Figure 1 (cartoon, rainbow, N blue to C red):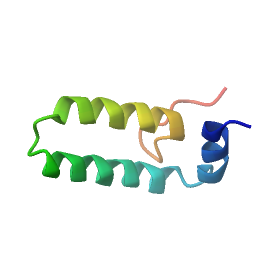
Figure 2: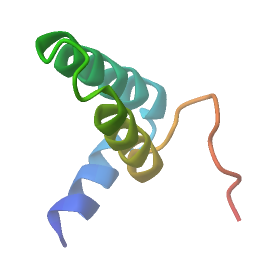
Figure 3: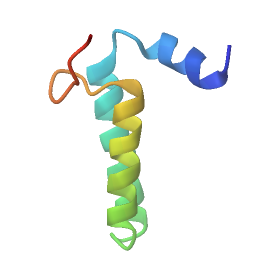
Figure 4: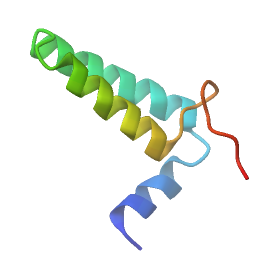
Length: 63
């Protein structure tokens, strides 16, 4: 089992908390870099949310 699979299994069922944590971490990075890398941070936040789930809003439909 890869590290990413292990993380996904640990975070399953806690998508909204994970999404909040990703947002909070991105805001922290933005504040420390004074917004210099805002677009890159936003892209990274989106990719992480896609990987670990989006919580209640914007979650892709399950098939």
